[in-house]
Amino acid sequence: MIKDMTIGQYFPGKSPVHRLDARLKILLTIAFIVMLFVADDIKGLGVGIAFTFITFIISRIPLKMMFKSIRPILIIIIITAMLNLFFVHTGTPLVEWKFIKITDKGVETAVFMVVRILCLIVGTSLLTYTSSPIDLTDAIERLLSPLKKIKVPVHELAMMMTIALRFIPTLLEETDKITSAQKARGADMETGSIFKRAKALIPILIPLFVSSFRHAEELALAMECRCYHGGEGRTRMKQLHFKLIDLWGTLYLVFFFAGVIVMNKIG
Image 1 (spheres, one colour):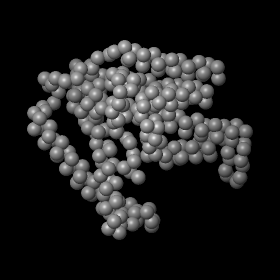
Image 2 (tube, one colour):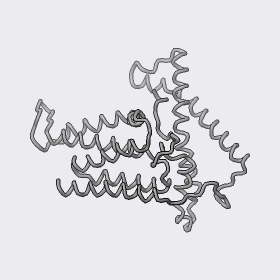
Image 3 (tube, helix red, strand yellow):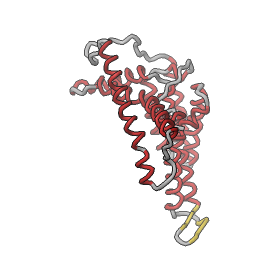
Image 4 (tube, helix red, strand yellow):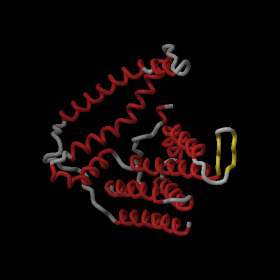
């Protein structure tokens, strides 16, 4: 169900991952993505898998959230696996039938790419799971602050990115409610040709657009009532400071990153 998707959700907690500075978490997430793409064999990727799983355990986020974060991109994972399985023809043939040829290298590549995507989705999901929208807004603004010198509206960009991220769960929930309401009225969205199914989405998309504009108007009104006028002269109740735990978090990632490089050398 759409309502089971966890994209953009925040789960409050007091784990070591929650206590990391939001700026550092963004930088570590970028480094984590680089680490996954630096791994050029299954051994190096195994280190990335260990990092992802251990970090998820340390964050104390329920493991079921790991599977829920994968569900929205399951079709992409399947397509990626099939493309690599049937279009990589190097290596020893395992199955040959007419124009279909599956090799051991194709199987290895398919598994490698699927595991990499899974680690990428699960690992990056931890950023929003363990960071509140306000912390992410401040962190993005701080990281992009050098761009203010060339007149880039950093605060406005950070605010838009965070609001968009924050409203993903809300819009998913709205979509699920509208879909259920249309099905209760006898709408058929699961049978027929692809054109019929696309046409059946219109009664969902129109109310969703109306709901989105209503949410945007309510948010704008709430911000105006609180005298929000952008980042000029704005102060923060919560100041961001690097702490000792941030140093340990950095060393933790460096350890695994070094492990990936070592595995690449051994491989």
